[in-house]
Image 1 (tube, rainbow, N blue to C red):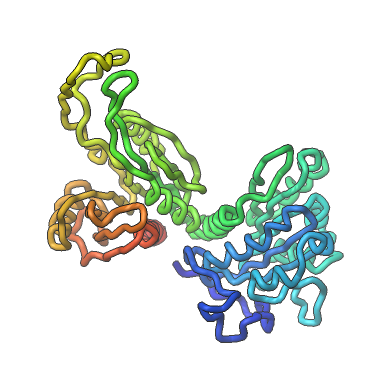
Image 2: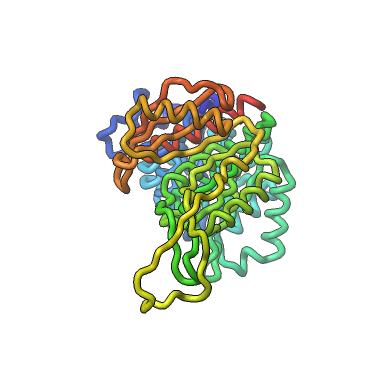
Length: 432
């Protein structure tokens, strides 16, 4: 995805690695997990809260999403973390004071205050600019650029009327202000897992851009396996870790989309989402999906491993183990995807096959895409899928149900997830 170029002067002259970037072998380098913030300059303000000890990891997590980060440290924040450590994390000098180049004036794309202490929240809510960090945030508010705030303090402070009033004043000051939820634990508003917080920041920034462009943002996604009951205790089911569906959800979230997840049996669930509903059987999934379709989502990603066969009858109670040999009649189940009538610009499905090559996969894709009105189909070959690896052919069309283009071959779950998320994002933004 494309973001605007960083404004001129954004932390100019403060990149610790010089003009030519960071070599992959450098201690300052990070491994990209997403490009959701590629080309985005983020100013990160660290104020005086014990949560500041997580700011090093948080800055690195933002960079793993492609962001260019400049850290700012308040006097209170410096009691918990050093400018040297933040500068290392950002691969850019940490700002601590007013400077001749007026660096306290907003020149980046977004500002994140994490952690935000009660004292610092009071300052920025009331226009007190007695520190470069407070002046920076005020300048962002003046330009109406995104300001993302993570309150971090004890419950007694968070619930104080004055703190609540200051947060409400910030919310009302501009539509570009986002107050994120903290991790509530032990009577404290704590710093979330840094990578999760970075994902939420990417979502807040990209969601604002999508809303400004009046782009559609609602995605319905299914993941995990479904079950069918033999009796009140035993069941048969499709095995699915849910990891691929979770990776797709997280990438869509980073790109600013609101993902409603219907999750069957799964070892992994997404860390970030708009909503998550657990389902067990095909019938549960079908009912929940129809309810969500009624809310008119803009896109569908159907990644659940749905049972193709189920017992013809369910026995009441628990079948005695002394009953001896049992026979179970299995009957075909209705295809849930047949009832997922979505009129949006993106409809993605997954299909697991055995013993197929690219040519056979292409034939399957042509038929399946046309039959179900898909814009993308991911064809997985069972022998190429495991916990460690994932090879798949990805077929997509320009218009739902039309002939497929030449497939893209993915070699990992992460690669598949990014391709699916990019497909959905591009089609939603194209129809803005």
